Image 1 (cartoon, one colour):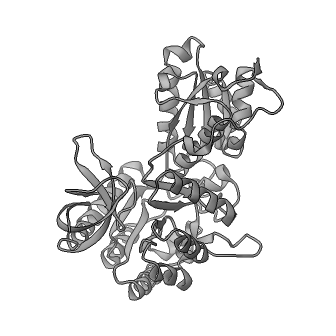
Image 2: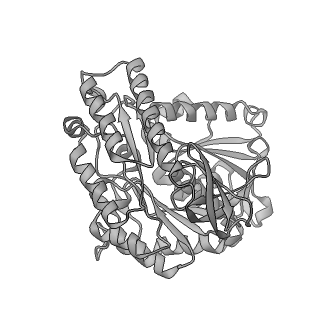
Image 3: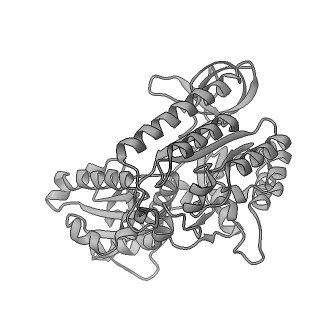
Length: 440
């Protein structure tokens, strides 16, 4: 059919699986669709098209994505052909054409590197032919308002090829987004009401190394903080090599850059790290943490660790636990190793059985929780700025301090303030990772 007005186009609902990077990708697709005349729907069962943006980083994520796809396929509207199912993101990128045979209920597949073509993909599905001049019909700012915290992706892909990881095969080689593109995204988010910008990527610390002229994450953070002095900036997932003296100084010199360092060490045993195709050792990592704390004593430190990697002996696991005890992390994410097809680690002979991997991961998680909860409790009596985020379902007002990243570190419950405000609160009590604060 010929396209002439936005009213003739379909409604689209997104179901997004996986991490915040996928959330950003879904928003970018949604923005393109809205600009081109499609309408967004909050109800997948009532939408004309349902896009499931999949995650396939590990097998568990793939299984969750498949479950979501099959649930959509069972919608009456999809089953009887009134609505269309589109599978996007990591699964089409990882599994390619074989996915089409496995999921015949889907009308289309959009791999990560085709997400910018989402409008033409949906147009083709619906038989829409655009007349000359038809295109941007709705302003970007109308897509979503009053977003207190927003993710901004600063690069995509990865060149590290860690032995356990599928990301380079899904997302391709590393490439930085230009500072101009990033500033545009930040400006868009701030215009919608964001008071916090969370910079994300597979490897944030490498930002700018492939640009001409070269730049650095430290320079980007400083420029952002200077341009928007009333906005908090937080960066996630900085590999150990990305923690430079320049970056530490940039954080120290700007009150609106959260003194929050998310460093995925993954392990502490040097032999295991080498098998993972990673660099470093527990001793080197402790030195790095000491260097951060020397410059910023109040720095918040988060890491992710893998338990049960192939060849990990009980002694290696004990070394990992000792590292966690010595490091003094505020937050630790723990994952049992997942044997992923196509990775080098999946071919190693010394695989550990699932029960033992789960046992080690739970023990490490329990240890980390016991240590981190004490560090969180030490904040009682301190007076800190808190970004008011909104209300829980029971009406309780909550926010997040600079030591709490979205979705992973708990929240701070408050007795006053409005969403979007940055208030000063005294911490009165804590429960594991949650805090309670009274406005000062």
